[in-house]
Length: 207
Image (tube, rainbow, N blue to C red; front, side, top):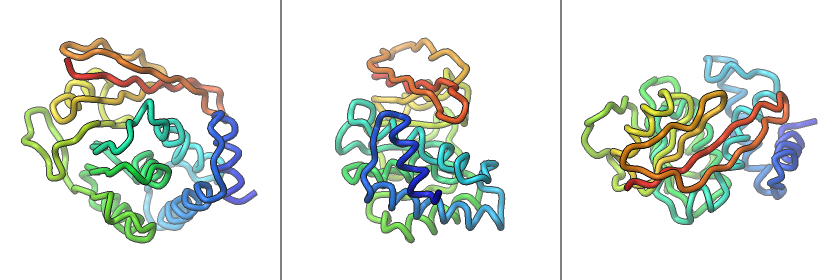
């Protein structure tokens, strides 16, 4: 089974079927990650099925317009190897994204992948950290901010609300945080096919 078949299987398992074109685009990204992973540690996932799940499960759910509204200007903090932000850009041609990542080798990979996949007009990468109280970033204003496994959920929510009126908090074992000056407006839960572990994406709106 190649990446395309694994990606289509993942979409079906998440009850979000993917077209052949979407699977092809995502597979090209997976191939680039796998290639660079042989030279540097982009992600701990090495086997194809595990790599597909790590790269794409969250993005497939994020692609729902109830989660990421149409024409969103997205800030993604702690982008790592580019997931789920780059896959989201592949699945949603209406969305533009600014990716923030401090590690140079990951930034180099993401910029390579963005160019290879023809996303340069909608996706940019900033090589830096983001801390509370920082000034507005290049690409602001953003309509939505998201981050995966970069900060504790409550800490990320507070930081995200400094930069966008809508913030997505991705949680696994943790509870979704309570917010001050924000309201949880939408939540979606889903199970990772390999482990049946539940993940939740909660959207908060600045009050």
